[in-house]
Image 1 (tube, one colour):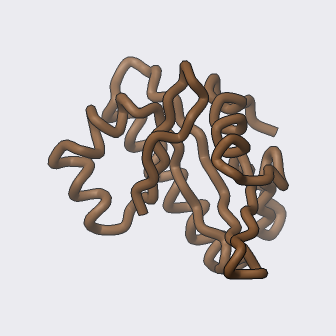
Image 2: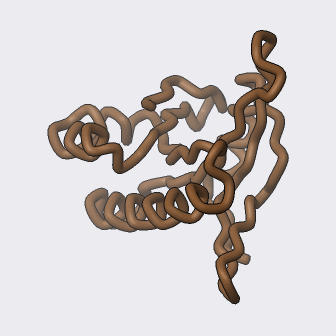
Image 3: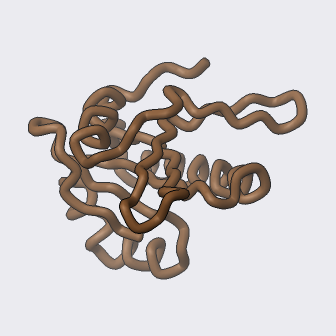
Length: 138
């Protein structure tokens, strides 16, 4: 099993504060003989919808030497997990959780806007200090 990201528990706490129930920690994806692990699985029951919502969340800290290198790895991992989820559990949405400053540094800039425009990620921005979700980018 892979090591937890430094913000793993922060995002977990932020999701709970936002009304989500953590159902998997981590969320295991098995494909043939390979096991992959998305950081978290969560559900939220909506009052108007008995089935509720299901998500998987991959947490990324972006603390490496290069934001672009971190972004390339995160998007590659996200695309792989999304393809597997589409086959195994198509009703579960995948999100990439990143600190809010990364939203501003990357996803609100032209590069990030291109990635979002081409549906290469759905993103959650969180505040690491307050453990609160600031933004959902579908």
